[in-house]
Image 1 (spheres, one colour):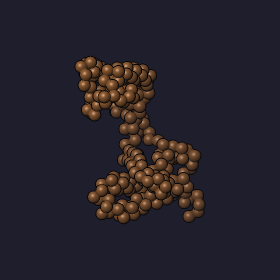
Image 2 (tube, rainbow, N blue to C red):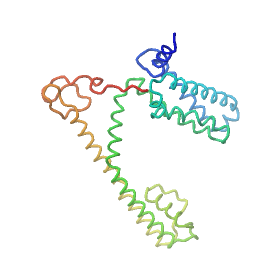
Image 3 (cartoon, one colour):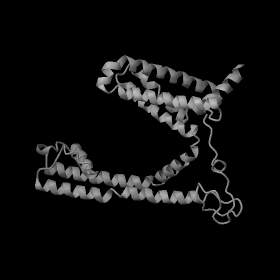
Length: 281
């Protein structure tokens, strides 16, 4: 087997999902990611870490070495290396192995290995669920379309929080826990979002009236972003329906998972034909 054949074979195994070896590799990789993340989580349990610290250390570096070799092989066999290196999965693959090496210089950095969990998203590709990612695209486009409205809403809430915070600082003062305007703004945000930690509470009558107003304001505005996103999501769903015309009568308005035209009954083709999966590089 020459150099080029080796690269092609590795590419089929590491990046492909159409071959048994490729599917087994990806499933093995998902299990390895889950085990390595579970090991990181268990190291935060003092009772387990004090007893099995050596085992956790070995597991951590075993999987770090394994993922490092895998990342190097991905670079080696990728037909378009720059595209892979700067792709979403390429960056995640790199970032998932960096924390272990950072931990040699920075204490606690290895906990950032939790980011490896993002790599499990490859299960959509392995289990042929890529078409379901298009539903996530609809949601992301809805958020993008609503970004200006959300920004205006966020700005309005920030202004209100600052005003309420300043009022509470003036009325309550440091004696009642409102030691500064930033602390007062923190209390206002906690109150408006209806979380209410209770670490800071107003003691004066005027302060309690202001806090009541802040809580009522929170209940009044909490539904606004939901309405904005829902409206944009409805628009995106309607737009998606208009993108897939019938090949027979050329009428649109079908659902994404429709099999037959609702106007003439002709076949619309399979989901795979209408939404072909994209290959990862």
